[in-house]
Length: 254
Image (tube, rainbow, N blue to C red; front, side, top):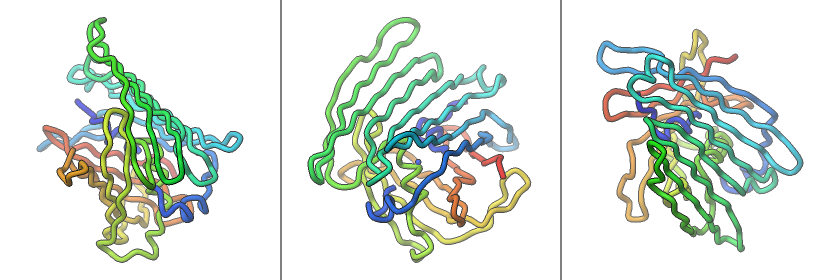
């Protein structure tokens, strides 16, 4: 089964105004998830993922690992590792990489960030190998103004937003460098809901990720996330559409 990049990453990472983001501190953590696939009467665990954070020096070192289950490997094998480095003060991304084996292709993306006032530059590399042959090898440079994240730091940014003071329907739009392109990421808040995850009920903030191009055209399907309404702000549940069926990522910890 194909677990799309943004969902896998999604597992399970905003940037608030910079003042809010920098005010929240994350302790070392390791969060485990089940990745469930649903299509019609089929509802089965298709993979597992772990989202972890480590404090070292002035930085957060974050990692997401995701893998499909043996039965799903027959249809679409996934072995992904995403790494990121985020400055603790100011909550600025400095480096992101994705090392992925997905459906017979090996992909390696990197983004190295630099800053000049409000201007953000991302130097990106992308390499794709299939059946031992290099299909893509490119370097590009992306530029943005204001708050800018990558596919890992986005999850920690959205965990930091002050949803308790937001009204339902309120949103914030930032820029995301995905490794090969620049997109607008809108985080829309819907309110507080009770969500069950692995036999436990969590009080959660419900939000939606909306990905669009500079011109406002959607670049992928929306994704929904439920973040625990407590001091830890754990991503408890994430849902997204696939070309066939849906995928649910569910937190399995306490």
